[in-house]
Image 1 (cartoon, one colour):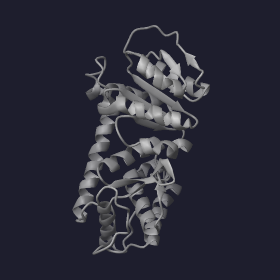
Image 2 (cartoon, helix red, strand yellow):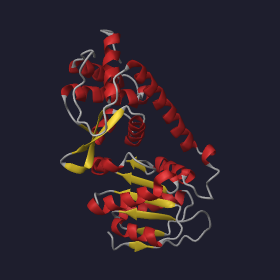
Image 3 (cartoon, one colour):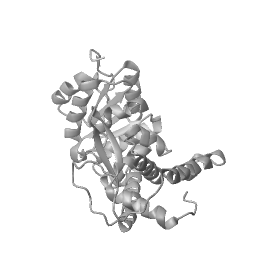
Image 4 (cartoon, one colour):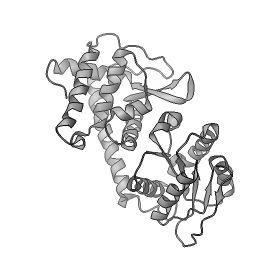
Length: 305
């Protein structure tokens, strides 16, 4: 793939060109179509290894779109690190589009900085994400467009909702945060016990609704992820990012955004996989765990759905 270097024939004006990096010809076509849909000039389209060199050579670019339909291993890790440096502070638009089977392969880089990740996204999601990323980026062409961008408004609403959830859980919990690097331990002390079967029965009841009504009527990814992580904590199971995205019962890209926001607010904690440096596990923070257990104790035998 890295032998592939193509210059498009697009010559019309507009913002600075977009660099496209892809793992296959088919992936390259999808990325080019997304850029064209927004009228962006994808002037350079390269393989994953060549993208890092091209980034250093290209004087002006509005950002980079990375299209993945296969794992590029160490070369991809190096490219993502380089892109993240540039995307810090949203001064550089960076979007990575990947298939769901690659989530855990790149999950260690999904949470920090300004790079946006899309998972099995349709064309509307792709164009919206690219428009939003370039709007946030500190470029003269789009610097004044952020307040009018529908994607930016959705991100603000998401942030507000996660802040509300975090504040609610904080009121239920008085346990101090564990210091960085401390190994996760079962919650101890004056905290109510919750059986794993109790939590599983709630999860089953929530999924049962989908047999009778459209699933999107009840989309509540934050609560679904909290329940899944509480269940895993009680059962002493590790939860990879891909599994938690499935538990959220919403499109994977939406789930990932919620996951990142919940992590930023201190509700979720990431743990590196000791056997695979590219993968991370997610668990409840100590405060969120205590709050969930106290919530179940307050509700008692009432249906928690």
